[in-house]
Image 1 (spheres, rainbow, N blue to C red):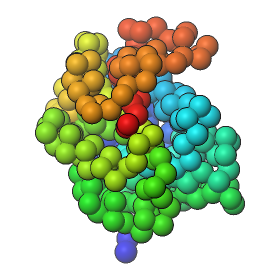
Image 2 (image 1 turned 120 degrees about the vertical axis):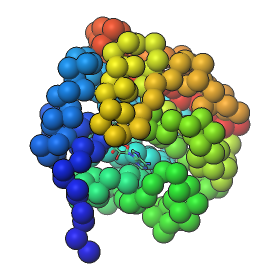
Image 3 (image 1 turned 30 degrees about the horizontal axis):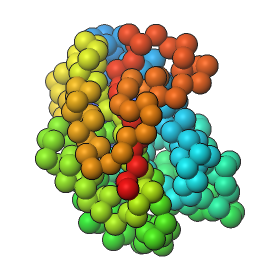
Image 4 (image 1 turned 180 degrees about the horizontal axis):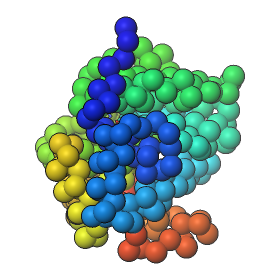
Length: 262
Ligand SMILES: C[S@@+](CC[C@H](N)C(=O)[O-])C[C@H]1O[C@@H](n2cnc3c(N)ncnc32)[C@H](O)[C@@H]1O
């Protein structure tokens, strides 16, 4: 069945791709991105900082916590390094299931299916609000063993789920089948940076629901779990390497953290 890309309407994945310097975007996305950046000039720096956060988190989970199964939701367009590239460097047998609901991400999903021969990557086209569909999918059932710890990651996606009850329902549902030792990684738009607040408003003005959250609200998303050090922080402050340490905090619009289920 042909994929309907609906190229006349801006999509969050393609706006993100454009701001990261990618080519998988259309005029409507570029126009929206230009307007959003006008109200929030540091957004491209922030998006790169967020992407680097994802890679450091993935490395931490694989190298220091021994996690070998990853369910990454709101994956976005392939951008090097992708999560599976980071974790399969630690252990080539690692299994990764990617989930996104954007048709253009589906079109490019093949670029995510570049697993090592010993491991697996799978791609599921699903809305993250449809937790039961995700958990019952062959992609998840064939690749994730729920008797062993699982990493659940929602990186730069929960800003598109403005309702807190809905966000908790999704997170609780995803974590429910996961055993102790499983982890949740989140980054989302912070309310503590005026440019982030402006960017979220600019998305809303273009018909894409988006909200900012305070640190307390982001911390609440991890309820029932044990946050690992350093807790909920700007993404560049989470176990920074030299590159992250060099980023000016005023440019960073995302907070995030990692927590463990016990
Ligand atoms: C800002 S991008 C983040 C991509 C990637 N996680 C990263 O941090 O580089 C947000 C992604 O979430 C996806 N997304 C937004 N709402 C979604 C939903 N309801 N279900 C599944 N994916 C969704 C978008 O299609 C987009 O690819």
